[in-house]
Length: 184
Length: 329
Image (spheres, rainbow over the protein chains, first blue to last red):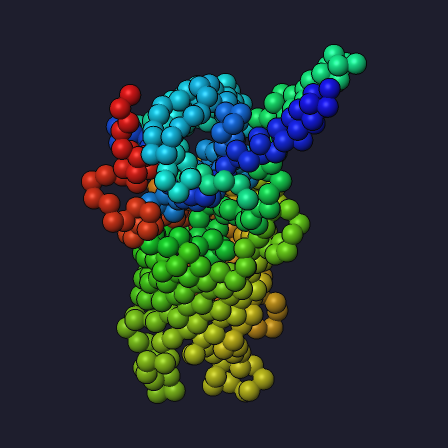
């Protein structure tokens, strides 16, 4: 009987700790997007501005990125992006919260593709989405995650005025690279 | 007893572990959101670097070159020149963002064949909400050189310093909500040489404008839609400083398309640099001196941010594969 009590107690006490220990947070990040349109290609990059938590044990992930951290080659374009398109004063961050469908059991140096399912919030609109992501366990114990998303602007209520319809793509490619280190 | 304890253990595990799993995604997000945030600055207080004639607190970003074409036509009442369209005054200008907080520029205006050199820098940036600083503050200074054929006398020799005039301006603006912005622009204009009248008469009728004139500029902007805004400005000259020159004012419409800003303007001044429209505006509105004009601003990205240099051909679009080679799946 003692055995059971100790098992139960140890489970109660240790399990949450064990789960905690498998949390990783973003050490480096690079999120960029690319719009390919007949008249103009537009790209923007946000470096090390996003915050993210990856829970390897539970297969869960959350990302929060400040929209204003996107840097454009042209500063006026950046202002228009924030003021007229993403309205970042009203909607300052874009978030993603989801689960990684397959269990993560990577060996050091191994790299695998996973399915990520969750909710993407952008421009005040939250939508279910699913994408593929590649996760690698590095030698120093960090994880490198990369993914590509295709975001349809109309889905997120981002309107393109007819005058620039040839300058901005209807669907934007988003590239994500995040390096995770164990949460201290 | 045994079974009871086992059940209790399982229940405890469930109680402690289960809720975590249930709302774990949102937990994670909340965990992210509670971390400290960077200050958020207000952007786009005005559409461009000019209201109508007046400077705004806005600056061009680092590496951005702005080309400005400013036109002011003759009096609208003048039918003989097709509402003044035959008599344009023009200013062509260039401005460059050396840093995000410091711009330099040059311009050339029709009136007085004037060249101007200017500098503008940011002192403070408004933060979101009522957090200090609650205003955006910029400083603008220029020096203008009149290069027209000299019409002087012995008392007014053609020496270089006589051709110079200067402007110093403190620009203080606040964006109220999404649409409305207001700006105050206390301004100091200095002319090295000022006009006098009645020099030959008795001293009490000699009329002389001050060399240094203080002006309070005010302006406002209201966004009608994302890309259209209405603007207005008034430049008040406190009395006793000038003779025969009047406060200038105007209203306008801003139209923004991608890299251009078009501004259509109606006002009582035909000049485009502060020493002229603020301190040397001799148009008499009551005699119908009212003018149409426009500003066109086009920006070019000369020096790209560091994220976009180095790379040739390839964009900066992350290219995750560059750091994580294709796996064998």
